Structure formats: structure tokens, C-alpha cells
Image (cartoon, rainbow, N blue to C red):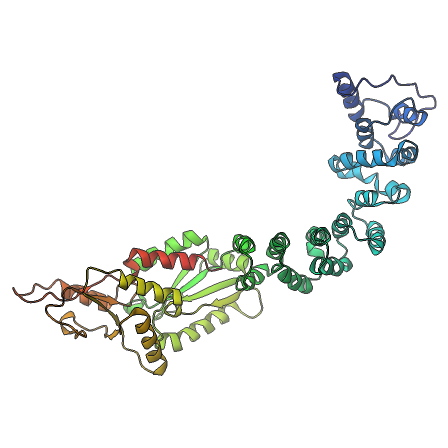
Length: 481
């Protein structure tokens, strides 16, 4: 029995192969591919011309030969036509185990003809000599497939070339080939220029190129931070969609007023659990009057994956809590996270400052047709900043607010323009969840009035109990990175 690629001293002539497409031909080639036939007569038949160099035969032989046999086939190809062997190798090599494929590296390096097709085939191997051959070829003529193969070599020095070609104006095929090369060797390239280059590509006018850049950014260390920065940019709609799919939602810390002793109302806890399910990331509630609870291991694991924690104040007015307490809470979380870029703290504005929130309140007030008037209540605020905010919000909502302490009784409220014949009047406390004021107002509503006395104003439920507002907050916070 001959070793692969060698010949016997006197190989016996082979009968011709059965016709193409026949069962007998398929069986013969299957026997050859399984090693049931001696390769010597087959190679001798090709050399003598008694066997036609047909594609299916060459594919089978390419998967059986050792290094000597690979050299012989390459030499024979000079007679029957290198393109046919190139086609056969293109089919055979990708399907071979690594050890069988390796026997072709040295023969291809030393005997393969010049040309992009042969270089692309050689580029499927990872070897510094292959990388050098590809660089030499690309110095003379850029080729998209060879750029991909150069990236496959994973030689760090080639990252700058691939990045520059993908960024520079030029033929679309070349730019995409260079970017594919970057993808194939992604972890081999210097990180800082790669991050900035991919971020620039994400805003490219070619949407396919930009979307691919977003995909690659998501695979890099600290990639989630880069994606969150990109989310603030005016990206094309398809790229923005790809970006949202690649973002890993960061855990959220929601700062809430809470009740006496730091108690968080059940309606807020239920809502936070629903938000957590929709985001697929942990959500932690922190009352202003208590320190943050210890996050769970799941919370920290999510923060590590996303590279960030979001701090969202569920506060509606710019009072002392927003101006003084929130900065202190943010500092405490940054101390907890420690120095370095591993986990960043993303701090968001209090929701009362969101224009979309203000306009939602205006819509809710305008839709209450059953009432002659709706008065919105806020706890008393001090200082010029707070007054400017209240004036602005009053302009958006179409009426001024009424400063109302938590201890106010329903019967004590003096409403602007209140007349016995004015019709039903409603009160909208600016509070997400039930608190001391809403409890007091509700209790006052249950008081039985003497016959003939006008009904007291009707307190509307806390905002989180109103379906449209509850859904808005779920959707808005679900969309945060």
C-alpha cells in the first residue's frame, strides 16, 4: 500500500471513470476519498493523460494527498490547467480537517502560480509568510478578497491599513473587504484607534458599512460604552435599529421619594419589577431617606456586562432633593464603583425635566373633559430656579400650580376661580405614588357633606396609577441603554 501522494514502482493502469452523474462513478470516488484506493495509479493516470483531470476527481484527490502528493498535483496542474485545480482546491480545502488541510501550505507557498485566486486560497492559512505575500500583492493592486485574507492573518501591524481603507472614500467593495478583514482579526488590532475608527464608520453614509461597524464595536472591550455614546448621535434609521439590538441594557438605580422611614410604596415596587422584566436587566429602587440597599450578584454581573449603571431620579420637581441629595447619591455610587472605566455611572436628569414628560401631563389634563377645571398640586418650593421651573410648567400645562404641603386638608384648599356653580373640579397631585398628601386628600373625599353643600374637589389618583402615564414611564425607561 502506498503512502499518500507516492507511486508504486509499477502502478497498474486504472479503468476509465464511469460517466459523470452515474452511481458507479459516485461509488468509485467515495472509495477513493475513504482511502480504499491506492493514490499512485490515480496520480500516474493524470500524469500520463489516461485519466481526465475532471473537477470531482481533483476535489477527491485534494482531500487525500500528503505534502508530496500536493506538490505533484500542483506540478501536474501546469499541464492540465491551474484554474481547474484552483477550483477543486476551493471546494476541497474548507471541508478538510485542519491537519489534512495543513499539508497544502508549503506546496502552495512554493509552487502555486501568481494571481489573486491563488493568493486568496493561500490566505485561508494563518502564517507570517502568507501575510507577507498578501502585503506584497496589495502594494501593487488592492483587492477586496485579499484584504479579508490579510485580516485573517491577525498580524497587528496590518490593522492600520485595513482601518484606513475602510474609512477612506473609495470603491465600496474595497471598503467592505477591509472592514471584513478587521472583523476577522478583531482582537489583534490596537484598541484605541480601532474604537475611534469604528465609531466614525458607524456614521458612514453606507448603511451596510455603518451597521457592520456597530456590530464590531459591540464585540470590543468597553464596547457598550462606545455604543451608548453612539446612541446620542443622529444615525441613519437602519443603523440606529442595529445599535439598539446590540446595546446591553445596564442595571438601573431609580431614586424615589419613598415614605416615612424609607418605605417604598407597593405600586412603585410592582412597576419596577415590570420594568426589570421588560429591560432584561436589574432595577434597584433607592429611597431618598435611606442608603441604597446592597445590590444582588445579578445586579453586579449585569453592570459588568454592560459596563455601566444608570441613575434615574424619579423626581418631578427641582427641589432640594434634586439640587442637593442627588449629587450626594451620585458621589456615593461612584465611590462604590471605584476608580477606572470598568463600570461607569450614567446619571440622567430628573424626569420632571423631560420635555416629553411635561407634554404628556399637558395631554392628560386636556383630556379630562368631565371636569370644569383641573388644578395641579405641588409641594412648596423655594429659590429662583424652582420658581422658573414652576412658571415654565404652568405655561406648558395651561394653568399655574398650587403649592400644597403634605399636611394640607381637602377642605382647607383655596382653589383659584372656585365657584359653587362652576361644575366638578379635580385635583392632580404631582406625585408618582401614594404619599401622605394623597392619603389625606382621599380621606377628605370620603367625608359626608351636609345636604345642599357643594361637593369637594375630586383628587385624581397618583400618576403611576394612571394607565397612560404608567405606560409612558415603562416605555421611556425601557429604551434607556
